[in-house]
Length: 245
Image (cartoon, rainbow, N blue to C red; front, side):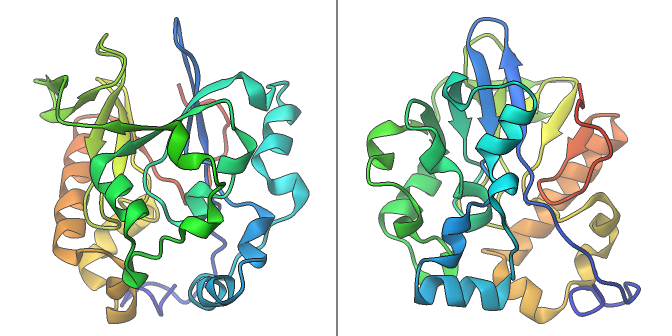
């Protein structure tokens, strides 16, 4: 970790590629991201590039269908999949959910259509049918939580789930905000204990961020929410409990 953050203790850390499951009273089951699949090893030079930057370990048991089935949840019961952004550790399981609607920000969708190498977005990791199943979130139906200042797209129109921009790490990154309760913050930071090291991020790690200045501003927003007793969950932090709400 000390090679990522100045002043951080020398230690090795394994970062999980986290996935969150939400259940809506009328809209059913919603996934937030899909983690890795073993396809990360089979994409030629793209796999080699990604493994050089971010070495991954994935088995069949690690893939999302196996994880869901352990909890008695059929993959085909997932109605929506919110993709916070399109890095390989968030889209690996897309192929397992052909019946689902995939929710993206407009900017993420634009990146999908015309990615730059620096985006670390590889459309070949996604199934051929993906574009047909995408629902792009636009600027309509915006809602402001006046208690916290969080503004986002009111996805179901009932105020239960806001998709809010978390710019910085990736172009178009969004988080899932349950007003007054919690924020699924994707890669706004790589861990709660790392928030205070944001200004100490070393140059190579800064290069991975789409916009380091925006990244720092997003971390500031996240810190503010934590101070207001909103629970914040990051995609690469290891949690000791499965149920967070």
